[in-house]
Length: 214
Image 1 (cartoon, rainbow, N blue to C red):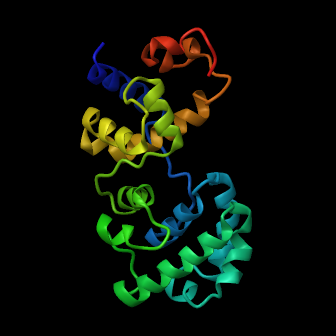
Image 2 (cartoon, rainbow, N blue to C red; image 1 turned 120 degrees about the vertical axis):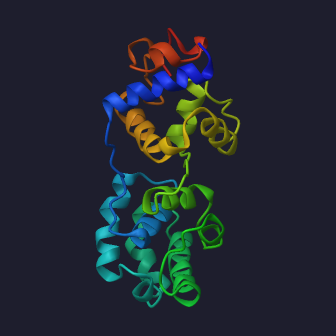
């Protein structure tokens, strides 16, 4: 089976299991998605969703957020980890959105990646999920499964993104990103995993992965 054949079969399984995957980070608009994604770095989506209602109760737009003291934001987001840097980033990006973008979230990778705390993965989430632009955000789940399924070398998230973009149709990237994350959580954990019983690993996992957990 070629990588492309394997990719097509994987996509078919994911479409059957998760035909309409939802965005795990709760949000109302591009700005709240941007902030939630910044908070999700090294933090679970569940924890972020527990924190953002209080944060957005104080400020759910860049105009109001830019007026909040950094320590106030930090106190609210403390349980997400890296609270000091995340609070500074959220305040800083909000100020830039107000002064340079009229309070709107820009819809280009270049502009997004110039914002404090916004790297390529965060920009990809916003571009794909908020603006419907071609983007394939690679988080730890996608990076791990792409290597487990033999679709990428797994040497870096940048390489994984390039490899997956070559294997899957551009129109599927946004949906596929969500499907793989959902599949990873439901069927394909990092540890204690039995490939032979997995709906995808049973045919897609590298030979070395069969017969053992992990």
